[in-house]
Amino acid sequence: MRQIKFFDTTLRDGEQAPGFSMKTDEKIALALQLERLGVDIIEAGFPATSPGDFEAVERIAAVIKNASIAGLCRANKAEIQTTWNALKGAAKPRIHIVIATSDIHLETKLKKSKDEVLRMAVDAVTFAKTLCDDVEFSAEDAIRSNPDYLCQVIEAVIDAGASTVNVPDTVGYTIPAEFETLILYIRSKVPNIERANISVHCHNDLGMAVANSLAAIRAGANQVECTVNGIGERAGNAALEEIVMMLNVRKDIFNDIICKIKTEEIYRTSKLLSSITGIECQPNKAIVGKNAFSHESGIHQDGVLKNPFTYEIMTPASVGFPGNKIVLGKHSGRNAFTTRLTDLGHTLDTAAMEELFAEFKILADKKKEVHDEDLDALVYSRSNVDKVHFELEYVCFSSGNKHVPTATVVLKTPSGEVITDASTGDGPVDAAFRAIERISNVNSRLLKYKINAVTAGKDAQGEVALTVSFNETDGISARGYSTDVLVASVKAYINALNRYVARGMKSK
Image (cartoon, rainbow, N blue to C red):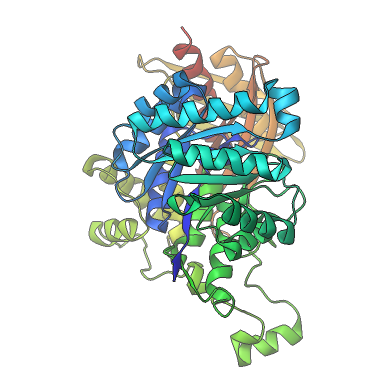
């Protein structure tokens, strides 16, 4: 039996995709959930790219105990040292070094010869090994590299101390049969290959990332690099949930594979990522899409009612599709509330739990039942607030089909100053945003605006995800929650504004 290691790069490669940037606290929350999911390695970021990424990797390394924490770096000593400085507090640190090996990358990007790149790779791994026992080497664009040169590099870095060698399909170019052949070729031509794990990292440019990853596993790869919901550069990465469930559902084919992933945590992990980024996966997304276990056709409905396995090859429960165990409402006490939050994987200190319980009671007065998704939203709304400058005290709207939309907004600053303004607009949301603009003395442009219902029903909480450009800067994304979508919109806008103010303070 072979155990397949899951290397999750949602926090690194996934976050590099446009619109998926995360704050440090959000990365920590997702890392903790990935640990609950059971991934073996969490690639927490690229520490040398920015102080923010360094901080995120360092803080994740400090709190994760069961999974290895990897940091990516290029093949130079300065970046390797920076990466180690961020990782050294981890229970299980891993330095992940990458350099390209394909002719097109060597000639046009690196402008170096094959011998130069080989020396750089060996020197980088040798130095990293003096800092960290666990070193992974990635041959970027391996699929378009000369196979014999690729094997030469892999052999050399294993001799230098690499314990994992990654064979990436960086641009999503290959097909399963070709990739399987390459992995078998590496296994047969690299004499010291048994001293290292073979990993694969597949992109989805032609929609083949999962299929290629599975082909590599069949050929002998024992680590697969992937992301939650398949997010990542361009068309994304291989989707973790799809690989995991294929290995579980098709045990007749993958009968020699052991997979440690706790499949019941898959759906919750997917929803957490969507809530953090404000980007939902498509409804027909395999495993975690909202239609993955829905049936509208009469023939399908009849079959499922008679035997679910007629049209469902896995149960919703096997991937953690929601089902309330405790019904929470206005009469629920602290014990039921805190127990359910713990069951959902949220860890808060006593003060934060008390504040959240008060918010829960307010919400429970507005809703007959408070569902798991409502509790998640309460927690995420707290982590989404940057209390740096402006805090909402009061908002009032006046609107109608024959009435000029008007909003009155009252904001409070850290100094305790209370500022009130009112404005008209094209609608109540626009009017509120204009009033906040005047209070904060900024110009803004709304780039994206989306409303989601957190749960079903007319009393559902509304989640507003938006992206705003302030004073012609890059867009800043934020979210807001409320049973009133107008209030949720104002909260989201203020959260984005506070992030903008915070960036300005940090740059001074």
